[in-house]
Length: 393
Image (cartoon, rainbow, N blue to C red; front, side):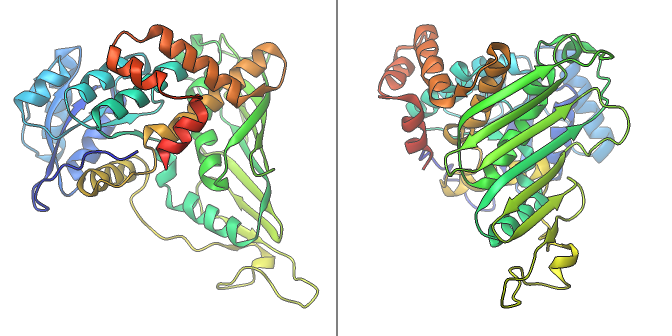
């Protein structure tokens, strides 16, 4: 979707207000402070003391100047002449906060998920259309240089038929995650699902998922799941994970394997991906580079900003250029739809079609929408998924 570029001089910093000063907000504070061409204008949080503490810690750590704080992000952005907002509030607040900021004429970079539900995310897509402002979701794994190397290497081996993720951690969080109905699928798997879309360059059409809780689990809800997605190019993506897996844990990115026509690429989620190929009948190999790929040589990795730092840099570049970045909400909502479809499949014990999930979410978004202009934009979509795909181009 096209959006309004900022139109400020190249040497003028992009001034941002941070909304949300909890643990993740403080990580964003460090990234914002370190990014050239970006200036922190203020910090907003519903708890003014938390905002003040976050600013004080940032000043003590980096020597950066103190900035104003407030409880109302829109009011604070106006007072400080900010150009944009970084929304790091809790998921349940994403929809009201992002809607208010977009309607105030400011672009938003938001933490994943886009919203607490797919229906709310569709409302945010419509709000972006109504306002012409950019809403980009920070799916931080997309900015991992080793994930990019995995994708390019897999594509060099021809069509990918199977992509798998194994994710096994023994995570003791305490708090709300241990009380969620489907903590692994809802709170964590979206990272892998979004990465799978990025790696394959294709979209899911259906999913069959089973979610369960190991007998020794310290989670109330299902802390383990296995899901198989059918993709629109015929590939299959298989996710197998658990948050109650003591011993031999994977990285937080998981362990990945892509099986392509001319070889296999494996990635442990941390080091460089490793390529394995077999020679064809003429003795030729399909991956060029140093070493012998048949022996499992590392793929080349191009360094760049990683994680949320990469997302922030892409957001700023998009604001200055007007180009659509990875993570723009119309394209990003498919990752959230994968989560909702997997949860629905596990609950119902059946295969779930993604188009059906979108249509139900579209109806719910229309029922719940209170603003007439956003409702008109939602109602203009003949069918949700094709309309979103067209807008994402």
